[in-house]
Length: 613
Image (cartoon, rainbow, N blue to C red):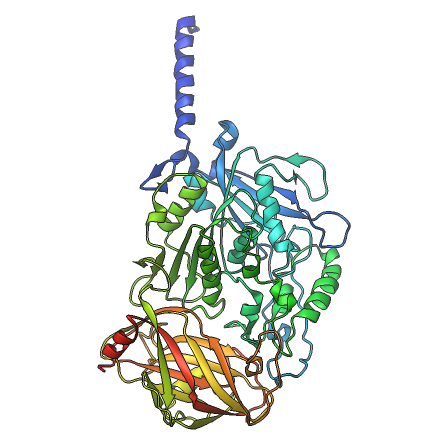
């Protein structure tokens, strides 16, 4: 068979075609944008070609007591063009204490809620976390969303979890400085290494230095923590249901209060839950953090706000914050309650930062619709002027709509909402009156605490000695509440300490098939009457003496449908959230000194119209 040879001219032409094809491939392998959003690029969309590796980033702290700066375990997932074509891309970064496994939720590891208010609680057991410190892949979260659209996705384990060094602190400074170090590494300002104790360095040559962070719950807290450091390069964050203050998570207006679904949890329980780090370093962390700092600071006896809690409140650290903030939360999240998002959103807005907020009507979690997230990161990480800030600031899912179909509003709270003061009168053990008109001779009502009854049991009851219920007239039109209700209760207690719980409900109570999460509970709040003067100093109540207790309920935006009634329920122990003292404490409510301020869209005029007044 004859051998065939290519002529020089043919070879040159073939080379030109191949080079041209390669150049076309390289040229096409860049992020593509349409309608202000990053699009899926076919060249980025094959997971089999993605480059995945891990490393350790050195921080500026040593929290495991070994005399060496702690290093955080980091993984990277990036398109192949970042290696073959010199492509630089922005980063979507997720950090978490949960990636390497968590402890059991067995109740023996929680605090016993059955004890008297002001008493020293008995100790509880501590679990051991079985570590899952995998490498090089810490997590697969978010990669399928962002890598095909022209981003690098980075994960890291929080201090003292997984293969990250250090100690968990649950809101301590190292949880802010750890993601800062990773962002510094992505910008060439910190060192990364191929191993936890080695000297071979890793450089993020594929990073543009622009970073966005997102995550839900604790993973949504950490983007805020990182942003409070003011680190350069953190351009935008999308926290979902973030815990922005551990005091507000485990306390309420001076009252020891559990997050919904985790009765008896406290900050040391969460510490145990996430402590999945190096087994040889755990004793040091337990002694230093859990058994000293937390034990001395968390104060389950009085529930007062102190320096320990102030150091774990990100609102106190907002000075350096400069990242564009897109906040997301559910109004019926009774785990991380909606106040957590609003307080940081409000502070960022007051600083003049780019802000947007998305609220839905469901429970814990729930990110904004993906196109909205895409536009946010496209604007701030890729620098595409897509008009995202010209869009409405607030997006709220209405009660009967799908979660991914929010209604736009100029702002939250609704600018048309005005305070409407409502007063109580009548026999609240049955069904008293909640009215815009004050009855100056309303007198007193009394309730008897009993933790055997849940809040829903009390709200449904036609009559009960264990709660006071004051109900509006039947609505002739919808009433739109938007903002933060405030309650003032003038009370006397038969004991030096008492729980105080308040629910705002929509009646009649709805149960059975088809019941929606928005049907019954409008919003809630809890307070310690001993903190009537100050959040930082509780004072025992003198039995029989009246005290004025004023506090806020959780933020809300809800339409109370015509045909319903608005009910204000005042009771003592909330079985699902508070401590359970021995039953029998009597609270006497002075109705002349008790009122509710409700933020109503349209104000007094609209409220009167809804009542047909």
